[in-house]
Image 1 (cartoon, rainbow, N blue to C red):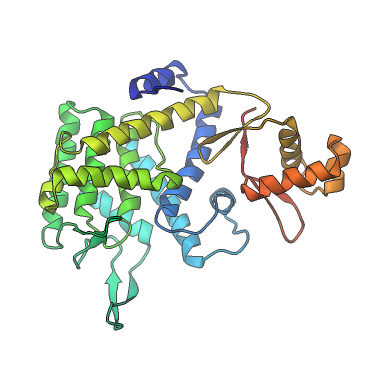
Image 2 (spheres, one colour):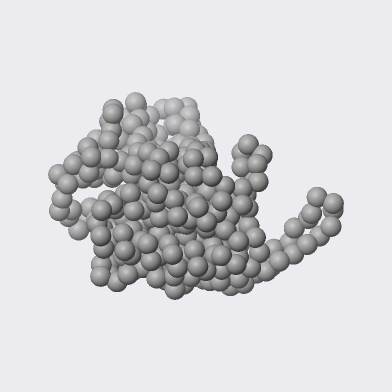
Length: 357
């Protein structure tokens, strides 16, 4: 949609209310996969979209997969369920204890990180699940600058301030849920209260705020990571590099990130609307992307793979009437895009792209 605004997206969303139970489940299934895959992929998780879907929906691991990545993805889904359940408690205020519980669930247990210093020496430190950081943390920006977050000493007080501010602002109702979520995200990231998992917790809490106010939940897509980080960096330039100032930033201070965030929410909401309302034979969906195939042969092959997973190319040719060379070309393209995968044991097809009909 050209010139999409948050207001137009919300208007389109309201027009399709109330959702049927079937559409609620359809959205929930897609969001579960998209959110967990992207939030973890942003932080370096190597599971594919297809591996994520099979793991979260069926509890199975397909192909080669890093054990920690599997455990992280599973824990991520548990925290997502916890967050959604908490968001249903409309009158219950947010607490630092809930945030720390989310973090403990996400990381599961304490673990040791080993690093090699520039001088070649080895060092190590402990990551504590559910506990605030005990060491200073910082990030090297894309421009080569070191950006410091709040110190371990000031973190507990700043987190208490953040949660108190949020609960009060929510009660006052002067900020919209989208403004609340954007400002909370920015302030939280400037504190960076934990030694690991801060980005994943921030994106969970953004959706906690949106869901609590009956807004659709959103996904920060890993393919748009640079846009996400650039918006945060642009806000940092306006706010300055003092962590305690960033932890108390105003909406005016974070204008670049707020503009980005409103655009993100608008796009995600409108994508949800299209996902539920557009129904065409050649229209499919994959990781928030609208795929419209020019040739009907793609849909013929995909639907066949879904209904009869154990198929040879000869079977496809017989059932669709498409010549073998075209089938080979089309299936190779589907495999390259990761829309489908083929099992090594039995040769069965797994389809990860969702039909609109």
